[in-house]
Length: 319
Image (cartoon, rainbow, N blue to C red; front, side):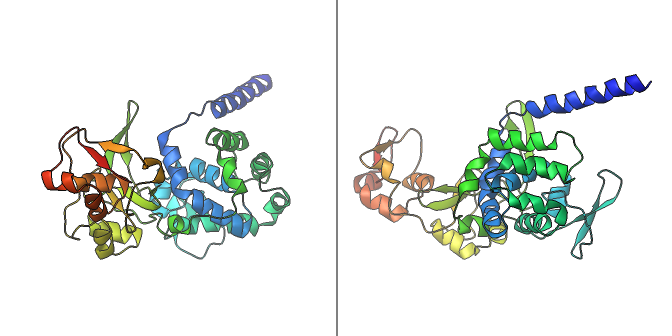
């Protein structure tokens, strides 16, 4: 019987190890990284926890922000109460109805994760390591008891290497706009089915911020309004409408871009000498929104087209 248990235990360990090796790149994880990498870099520069480790743990513990716990509490690191005096939530984990910390924003969760590691003696040895030693940090976290899964360290390492998260450990600055407007408070009505390969998943949580043409934008979801986006992004509905040359009561169409700062006078520099060819029924405003260009500036560059209207095959000056 004892031999059977040893064999079974060894088999389980091999299963964990094999599973840890089988992770594959997916867009949900990448979107999470794009959204929170600057938050992780901020925590690294302030508290010393490698950005790669924070991101890998956030991805693993929260299921890229899609887990039930993270959706209900903004807790992206699975940190239990442990004397916590703030808001709490109860969730089934190792046992039923365990107490977990709850946060108002994901930013608070990332900061508390750094403080949790920084202020507990059992993790103190980790801060003697270089912040670029993500392997040492991963194995150190497992050794210190952060998680019970025997393959936890390897999971973190695999995620870090697959998504090249180690590049953020060398950062010396972060994008404060991305941190401030990372969309911690989601619009509950903005949920729609999206397809990842053959799998359908629900698009939930805050919008992902995209950076382009020295500006930032989000992609509109069903039921979004300037008012709902204003609550989420902490930018007034009036400003959002103005930046996008719209009225704040205008109806938004799923899939369109909403820019979060005043648009630029021209497209990025790589469009110098290049023309945009109209391939479908679209307006100069559609093109202006696509490239983050002020409509007035685009019209000025293309006066003849503005007067005659666009037709398929027309060429538009963007720079």
